[in-house]
Length: 391
Image: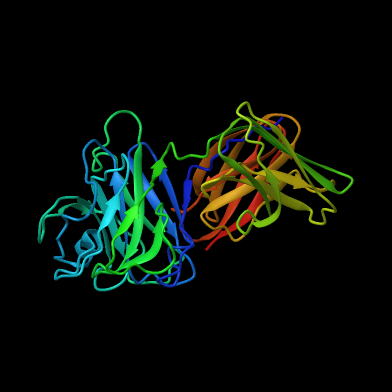
């Protein structure tokens, strides 16, 4: 059995589905990852332009605030957004419920005049009372139409101590004059912009214990008489809605081919899904695991090829960010993968352990200069080369 990890590294948190400001956040996804030191947030926005400020209120240590009622810092557009205050008489107070009491706020607005994202410590008071800590490294800036926006914060700057990273958050889309939309992440709001009315965040999202409460112990696939048979097994489940089965021929564009309901068995369950009449010579499959709160993550990938095809398949070319090479052979083997420039210089050198069956070698190339390269794959039993274009 080929056992694959459940998570690709990101926890994905969905927007609340509202569209009062045109839908940049209501149908968005916020993906959160960390490397043990730095937390990276990636907003994949909805259908409309990102013309306003997104404020993440973060509870990462003891103490904090039960509402924004005492925030009156409107010294600039992002401070006004955090405060929900226009600097005059208009205010939209955001009240937090339960144990969620944020200590910090990250506010981003990629368009002028702000073109910026930053991290502030929360505080009651007037102008400049919110303590600016550091830039959130927002990218890109100067555009409202990027499909994604990335920003970061460090564990240390969020006051997180100990070995792990754990925090709770909610996010609100709001204008730079404190006029609040109905679009948010982690806040169950009714449709219709509250504007300068008050809003209560009755819940919050948590990272990383907000990970889907499921343990995937195996995901396999095989091809028999033109039918793809997928099988996977869980060791524990809780609050599970189910699985979407997705397929791709290049590892980039994915489409849903079916769904399987979750058993919600605390000791796990076995699942199967069949795809009839496979016509492609090579297809990738993955699982989108969805919980009842709408959060989701992805499994590892299973690759299926028809008989007579090469044991090695380059997935997608030109390359974007990552070289993906599918390996199909029953025995375990150690491969050396070298990325070589046309003048013979080795720019990347990877050692990859294939465990048998089908697996996918992935080599990041985001820092490699654009151009044509040779990917050389070698083991004690084989050597094969591919031309790859990095745009």
